[in-house]
Length: 256
Image 1 (cartoon, one colour):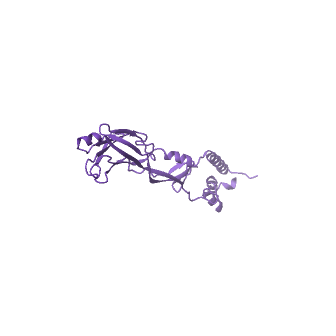
Image 2 (image 1 turned 135 degrees about the horizontal axis):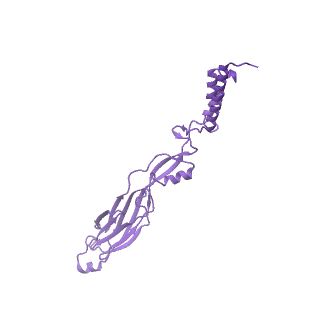
Image 3 (image 1 turned 90 degrees about the vertical axis):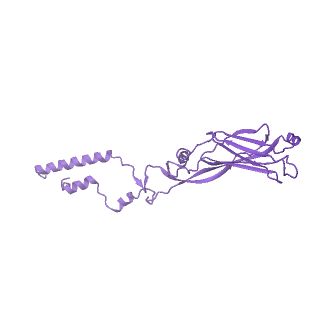
């Protein structure tokens, strides 16, 4: 049996205490979230957001504007991330006389946005062809939504986040635009003027919007099995726990 000096016994007690404290520390230790190439290793995936501009349209409107009864209606667009809305009014004067050179009507298109802004444009039917056209473009939002990557557990969750702020702009979605079409009769001869009740027209409404698509980002710096290759590095070199190296360094290992 080895007889230990008082100092040796003290060293052994300290070493055992260090081991116990280290073991408790290891058991209670929760590793902080680490980062791989700047992304949090939280079990979630990163998705790249790409935006492109697309165009869609509402059903065209074909109706009649009377000289004493302007056409008036409201429309709404149930699409988010709107960029611009275009109203295109066209017509053919159905009462012009003398080879289409006289009595040409003038039509006015008026659009009131949900915030009360009024846009107004007028034009007269063209000679000979009797055709007319006016267009109004209403800017909604020219700023492209956020392009920051989305962190989510899966594609469905990422898609849900794509429909939230700061990726989704709901300005004027399902809100009313008031449209008014009025006509000014061009005929000056009394009988012809009385006979001209107004004009038919066609109104096309198109809108541009930002469409977002998602693509899962590939995470680099992983091992062959898809895990963190820091574990592979441990296999290539002998790993010594911190508390054990401390004991060895103090020379206490020979007593354990």
